[in-house]
Image (tube, rainbow, N blue to C red):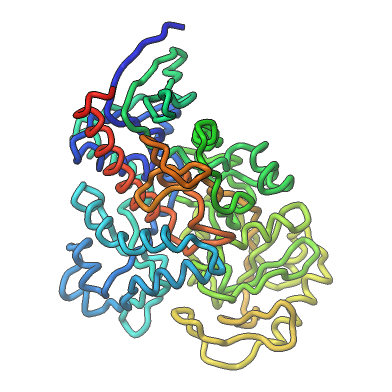
Length: 503
C-alpha cells in the first residue's frame, strides 16, 4: 500500500458525541482538525447514535432548563414541576451508585462543567427537549423526577446529526472507513501523529495532538470475556459494532495507565429479540425495557432475583442488566398488569417489543418458558406481601413488601388486574467502564501519572468515573464535558508546538 503523509494540528479518533465535541472545541480554539471514523458514513456516530438522548447535568430549577429549551412558554411552565438539581446532588448521585469509588477529581469536573457544557452544545446547534420518560402527570401538572428532565432533540440520531452539521460548518475534515492503527511518537515519547488505514490505504497523519474518543471494548467478545467474564460473550451489543477497544490498545502501547473498573460495564435488560449488534436502521434505544420498577422481574425458574423498586430506574437499570445475564439462559421476564401498563415507557408499546398478554396469571404462565408452579407461587407470595400505603411513582413512595426476599422497597402494587403482560428480556451491554487514566482536562497519564505529551482522551476511553453502576444520562454528559475539555487542551498543545516549530 502507498504510504501517504498529511498533517493536521489535532487528530480526533472516533465520531460519536465525545469525539465531535472534542473536534468542535479544538476547531473553535484555532486548530486544524481531522476526525477519523472507522465506520462507513451510514454507520457513523458510535454508541451516541443509539442513545435515547437523556443527558444529566446540574441545574437550578425550571428557569435554567428554559435557558436551553426556550420553546417552553410561560403558560406551559405553570404546569411543569422540575425540582432544582444542584451540583452537590449530582456529585452525591455519582458517589452513591459507585459506592464512593468514582475518582473525585474527575467526578467533580464532570459535575461542575455539566451545565456550561450544555449551554455550549446549544450554542453549537444541539437542540434539547423535555424528557417525557421522566415524568408523571398529576392534577394537570407534569412532575419530572430523578434529576434527568432533558434529552437531546430526536434522541441520539438528532445529537449526531446536529454535531456533524456544526463540524461541517466549521470546516472540520472527516474521513470515513478510516481506522487509526497506531500512534506515532518521537524520541521523547511525545505524540507526533497516527497511522491510519483509510479504506485499505495506509496514511500517516502527522499532528501535534491526538484525542482518543473511540469508545470502549464492548463490541469485542474476547476482551469482554477476558476482563468482565466469560458469560459476557452472550451479551447483546446495544450500540455500534465498531467499539472493539482500538483506543485502549493504542493508548496502552505508548505507555498509558490502565484505570478504573475494567471488570465492569453499563448493561441493561433489553428485549430478548433485539438485534445482536446495534441496527443503524432502528436507532433511538427502542429495545430497552426500563419500566421494571413498576412491576416484577422473574427468571425461567419462576423466581425474582432483584429488588425492582430499590430506587428510580436511573440508578438501577445500568446494574440490573448483569443480574439478568446471571439467570438461566440469560433470560428474565418483566411482568405487569393493567394497573401499571399505561405508565410503561413508550418502547414497551412499539411493534418491535416482544410481549405476551393474557387474561389470567395462569394463562400468562402457560405462554412462557418458565417453571409455571413456581412462577405463580412467586407472584401470589408477592401479592400477599404488598403493604398498604399511597402509591406514587413520581417519588420513592416506600410502598413496599414485608416478609419476602428480595423485597420490593417502593412502588409495590399487587398484580391482580387483568390483562397481564410479560416482556422477555436478556442482557444488552452498552459500554465498558475500564479505560485509561486522564487528568481533569483530558490529558492521558502514564504509569507515573505524568502526562503523555500530545495525547488526550474523552468519552468511554476515560476510566475511573463509573464503577459497577452509573446515574442515567451521565455517559452522554461525560462524553461532552471531557470531549470539550480534551479539544481545548489538544488545540492549545498543538498550536504551542507549531509556534515553537517543533513539528
